[in-house]
Amino acid sequence: MIAETVCSAVSAAGLGIAVVTAYRKRFLAAARVAAYSLVPVGLVMTGVVDWLADTAFSPTAWAGFGLLGLSWVIFATTRTVERRRGGTRKERRAAARAAEAPGAVAPGASAPALGQSRPATRQAPASRGDDDFSDIEAILRKHGI
Picture (cartoon, rainbow, N blue to C red):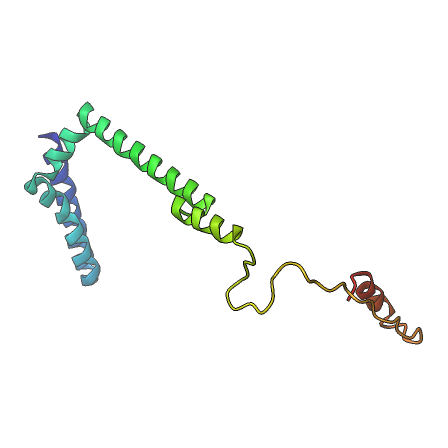
């Protein structure tokens, strides 16, 4: 009974604000305020307020919300762990078999990705006449470029 009274008072106040807004020639804003102010009375008339009041004071309902939250946490945790591991068990087994296969190369690769690598060749030192680029050449030589 108290919830219905509060909702009616809120709606009446909202409609009063809508009338004042319309008096100031702001008709679109007044229509919006009127629409928002009719929502609490509509909720009372449909029974949503009674349902919410019964749910808010029911220990069984709160236990149900707790179980829903716990199931969501478990679901989110398992999804996170699955993503960190790299997919489902079937996908991990297929990847392990492919890695163990002899001569495994990437699709479309012309030579094995590992193995036959060439050592980096050093370039001949540049002429010492250019002082502007000597620092840059020293850094490039240091990194083997």
